[in-house]
Amino acid sequence: MTRKYFGTDGVRGKVGNFPITPSFAMKLGWAAGTVLASSGTKGVIIGKDTRISGYMLESAIEAGLIAAGVNVSLIGPMPTPAVAYLASTFRADAGVVISASHNPYYDNGIKFFSNAGTKLTDAQEQEIEVLLDKAINEDGMACVESDKLGKVKRIEDAAGRYIEFCKGTFPNALSLSGLKIVVDSANGAAYHIAKKVYAELGAEVISINDQPDGININDRCGATDLKSLSIVVQAEEADFGIALDGDADRIMFVDHLGNKVDGDQILYILASSLKAKGKMDGGVVGTLMSNLGLELALREMDIPFVRANVGDRYVVEQLKKTGWKIGGENSGHILSLKHTTTGDGIVASLQVLKAIVESGQSLAELVSGMKMLPQVLINVRVENGNAAAMIEMDAVKQAVKDAEAEMGDSGRVLLRKSGTEPLIRVMVESTDPSGTQRHAEAIAEVIRSL
Image (cartoon, rainbow, N blue to C red; front, top):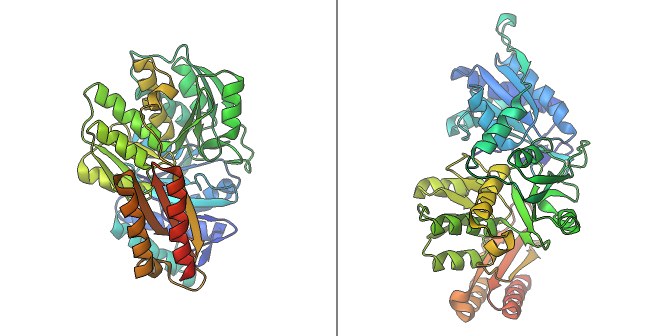
């Protein structure tokens, strides 16, 4: 799992109390490099997505790492999961990804992880924070002696190696020959990779949104906006469409009719395919936001299902706890620990394509066994109160209890406070569309009245 060490915030914005500037990025690189070097790290790989600020931040982080005595290998625009894989392949000690994932071009973030694709240790993170604070507030950044400075090289065949890795997760005995696929790379990090993977496995590929210019990443395209993909799939009479996000760790599909197939439905396809072949080992990990339809469909197949908090790191934690291999989020972040240590959109899509080829069924037919339940989400703004405390108030709890009692096992309620805004998110889903809307509005109104 990649660790978004300082979160995703705009270059125009701030990380904590510090604006993301070249100076900040350099000091972060130095702090991380100093800590990593102290534990024996000699080399770090840096990858990025296609947003325009990546060039600036790449140079700044590179300078900081070099000043700490760490060698740097640059691989250019590359999916986040590719950096995790290549860090191991090239025997680097750690990897850095500069990406804001599915966010607009004016955002960016910095992720650090080990060469095993796992987050840095808590002790390392604390050390980095101490040194970063010192570098910023006390001008405490010190450069190693000239003869100990790190060196920089560019790896030219990184894309080719990752393409071969992805292809290696698809059975040699199978082919995508005869399938017509539309691929939307979101003008992001997989613009030069995804289409080649599917084509080299035999598919006829129509590639869209693969001309990044630094500011069109995730712009009305990719996994966060399927409209253009749906239109092209239907116009070209393709078998289905595949959409990645900006750093290619998320995946979404549309079927031949242009209908969305989201992360919950992808999990259903993967689990039901393994179950049919008698190869389903354990259960599936979803999140609090996973559609109840997924849980009910898995229950019918006697496949265990548990929910983790929202966020891929919590899904990974639950997978490791249970020993299961499949998990993910409805947003399309799918984890298949048999193949990768982190969410990988291309690898996940190949597991779906494997199910399609082996079954001889269309994508629409494969998802037909799962009924998505109506889901209503209402955001209630809390202007002058503590959202977490308000959720625990007796009146709110009673409103939730009343809704759950009426819906029984055919529905559920979830209240969450936003992590970025003064909002309480009211989510209700059930088999009854009108009842779902009514219960959500009733709970939201109780919160507003308080």
